[in-house]
Length: 120
Length: 140
Image 1: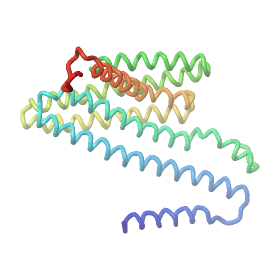
Image 2 (image 1 turned 45 degrees about the vertical axis):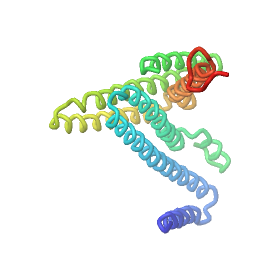
Image 3 (image 1 turned 180 degrees about the vertical axis):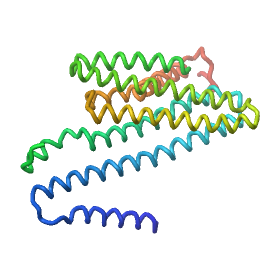
């Protein structure tokens, strides 16, 4: 609980630090937009990797235990594990693609820049 | 359900997705689906080969070879993922393909697995409902 609170407070401070920019008008707005985009991509990929790691680890642990107990069922267990791993891995790939889209190909970048008076 | 069936189903689902994408959104979107689908399906094939080599080969190997085989498995997994990440990065960074099409294509394996799960459930229901198939429950 203590660790969760520490992480939450750190995140709050980080967001406040990003939000508290000097009044620079549109340039500050655009700057904070890109800062938030980078933070979102980084945190998104980190959380996805964390969840995928735990998920794949549990799946492989259970499969190996199952094969050790009953080696004759190895074929069926391998296929089930393959399906599970493919599903879990696809989540990490989705997170990666979304993070890359946010960083390099975000479709709303130009409209947001235009709304703030910039031309990209 | 065998891995071979899954692989064939993957190619069929990819063909359907590319066709639907072509008629629905056009050539660029279909190309994105095709590239994403190829990445996902090839990744699935490689995952299967790596897992089979690990689970079928390692238990029969001698203790010295076992350590090497495990390290090689980890290396292959890392390389596979690294190459996949690199390819996706290049595709998105330089916008060579439509990103939404790429996302749809990367979902090929997920769609296949969902369809397979639905198919297996329906098959199981039919099997349970068939009185000639024999269940543990008495028929009244």
